[in-house]
Image (cartoon, rainbow over all chains, first blue to last red; front, side, top):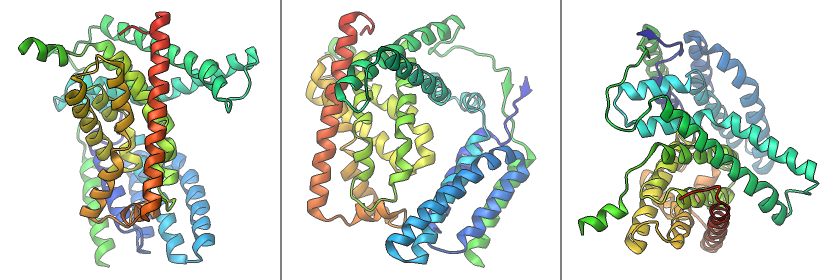
Length: 222
Length: 192
């Protein structure tokens, strides 16, 4: 058995995200929340999530600036605009731990915890299918253009030329996928299985927990 | 009695789980607008923007996988990412899925009839309106954004209007979902 390549222990990543989200939203109206977000961001970079941090940073800054700006223009209240900015920065920061964990590692972790196989399989598929579905949507739209179907804003066109072919593709994809899963010996029964790679709880995970708790306490106390 | 019970509660197959998971992935993609509207100060704005997609997709899922628990599976699978967007909504939708399933089983004794699928898909999202109101009143998380503040202290006529609009949209969405599924079943693409 070998260890996986996830930067953070998968279940810890989810708990970390929930903690950041809950604490950050509670502290949203406090200006010290900016310090907490900055600290968490640096901490996540330090434990190896720097790629996810760099991917999220520009998006969350733009969103925070735009929505903070709109909030200021609507209410002429700097505190409300700050709170809005903090909320969006918190949502962005909370996404980083989840982005640093491969869906397959999360599934392995849940399997270790004896979560029913049906649920872990479903979660794995739901998480991995987003890019494929985007591609399918693009294909259906291209087919619509080829046929000269017209605008998607027309309900009849939307139903006949987009929804029906799209759901047909979903049914076909899921049938093929189910067959593929069964061919690989996957079963919903309680049978003995071998896991070749298991997520391991590392020292950096313990440091992450301790630093997060210390950061939250410091934000409240100081 | 035992035989009847077996008919209602059937065992899940891999193809059922896979189909529900693929539909959940579609729900995840279409639910991406949720974090953007949590800041809009209007009662039920989240439910209003999610109404159509969160009724069409469950209706299709229930029409193919006519087994109690299908809606709960969809709620759980789509909740994996939803939990990062708006945590109370994940718990709320999971509980609403259970409630919708219980109502369907009590009224229609399962999903054998098409109207049962339509009913469950229709009530699934609107159930979250009173649930979220009670949730935020109890836990007092009124600082989670303007939409939540509007949710805790709604103007009554706005609340009634939006609730009716959400219900109408989910009813329409569920109808479209059932219609798509029936059409695909007739053409042989989708098998029960």
